[in-house]
Image (cartoon, rainbow, N blue to C red; front, top):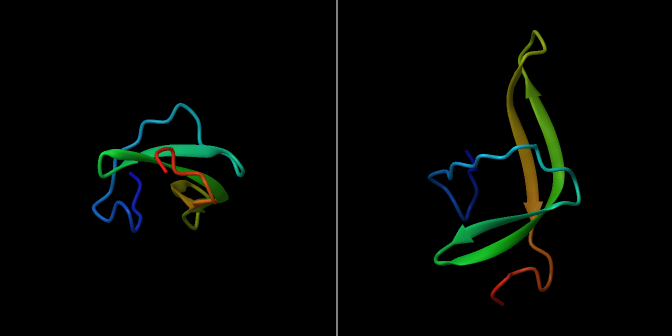
Length: 68
């Protein structure tokens, strides 16, 4: 699930691989698509080192909206 200001209720994603810093992600938003650039990838672990989540920080650069 992705939670963000644009998707506060969460949006399910099914990625074959975790996006890396600098890669682009296209997500739907109100009948248009927005392109986000991955700025930070942080693995979330519990105190035993088991992965419990993943935190992505994404930004929107100038001209990155696919429909303007």
